[in-house]
Amino acid sequence: MATLAWLQAVEGTSGNLYNIPPEFITVESSFNVRITTPELERADAELVASIRDQGFLRSRPLTIRVSGQTVLLRDGHRRLQAVKTLIGEGVEFKSLPCVPAPKGSEADDTLMILTSNNGVNHSPLEEAILISRLISYGWAEKDIAGKLGKSRAFVANRMDLLAAPDAVKELVKLKKLSATEAVRTIREEGPEKAQKTLLKAADASKSGKVTRKTVNAIKPTPVKTMSEAQLAIVAFLDAWDNAEEEKAVDDAVAVLRMQVAP
Image (cartoon, rainbow, N blue to C red; front, side, top):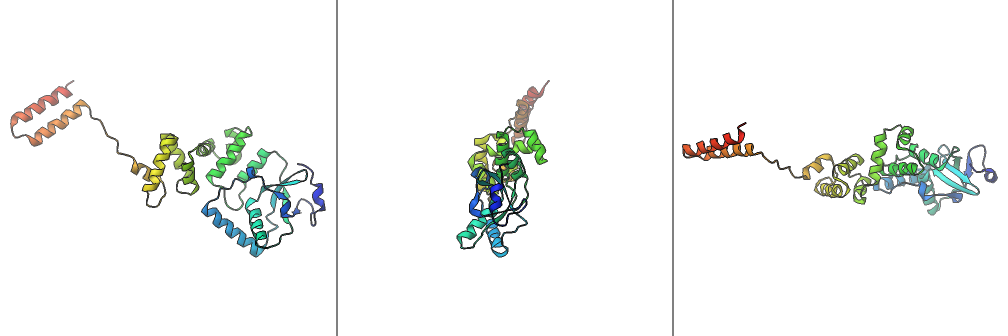
């Protein structure tokens, strides 16, 4: 990691904990994968209220990486945004506690973000974005799975989710559809047909949520084709039910014997 020597001049800096003015901290959009949802907005509002009441906790510093004279945020995007919101309301923050990220590459930083368990957990779509980034750095799916403590199928499913049609991802984003059901339907029907099926299921669902049950409910009942022998049996039964003369039944029996005879 680039030198942190210039930060020693910042008031209150000591050891590995750096007190950095919030305006010095740069957010890279590629490292902030949070997707705005109603649920996340509520959580963000609660975080703003918590920091307003308690201040920014030194026990939960931001994680940074320094490149020359630039401080790059690596973990703590929601907390930094909450601080910026409060600054906009007139609350003053002279500095924020920060710790340097462990030495490593951008891939290591991405893995750190993916495996961190602070605050709101990453959604399936956010996980998919981060996994895709690791793959773009040259990581194999099996290696990512090992680092995450997940199966290779988990990684493959997240990649299939990321490739899903936008309308399907929107259902997953709004938690109207699980990532598992989205991937399952796409694999069964293909992306375009699956999108139509899942949107139709969402419209038909009273709760607006799509499950395997709601998907199956909108699918037409398969029409079973009958063999010639089965058709002959049906004809025989119809003749039996409707026969007014013995000859009609005899004719039906003769047809049936012709069809089922070895």
